[in-house]
Image (cartoon, rainbow, N blue to C red):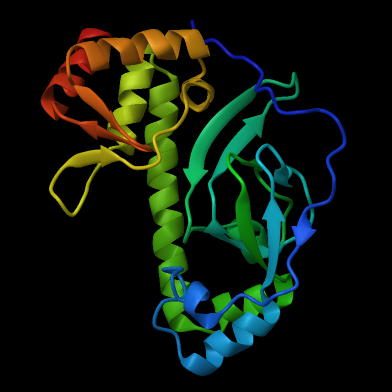
Length: 248
């Protein structure tokens, strides 16, 4: 049976996010893959339009059902996309890392936000107002192509994630999530950059933090996983896959 729990996000009214006085530079925006290589004239116009806003950890960046249709870019920090059921149960869907953009569905179709986004760490978000966002998407073939590729990738990932949540065994869900997050790095290691906390892993696998701790202890004990600062190294990828199969 799949378990659910509530994330300890403060229910008290939050202070408004703090807008920055400075502009976002062309150099910073160029680090966003969606915008990389665009003409300098386009990038300069974007620096005039994008408004930087800072969020503290656990601040809400957007709420499911919001009617604004701005396009957002994560410039610093880390965000977590969550879905909240009518009963108040929260399920983590995926992380947003620096360079990622989000909120694109509302920018494209004008419908309310489809999920809630919470700051998992102190974060800086660039907000591109809806009119400028639509001009960027629909008036630039390069951006439109990249956007389509991004949406297709998200659909594939969402399908894989639904399969993960349907796994009955909690340990297997944890191991499957780590397998999804693990990627080769330039040094040919298999790593999970910015390894999620136990609480965040529990949120994304619909299980308790204590269960996550026990599942990870098995990996550390068998030297399958190794912590290295803020990242984790998967030393034995084949053994991780074998554990997933054993717990199915």
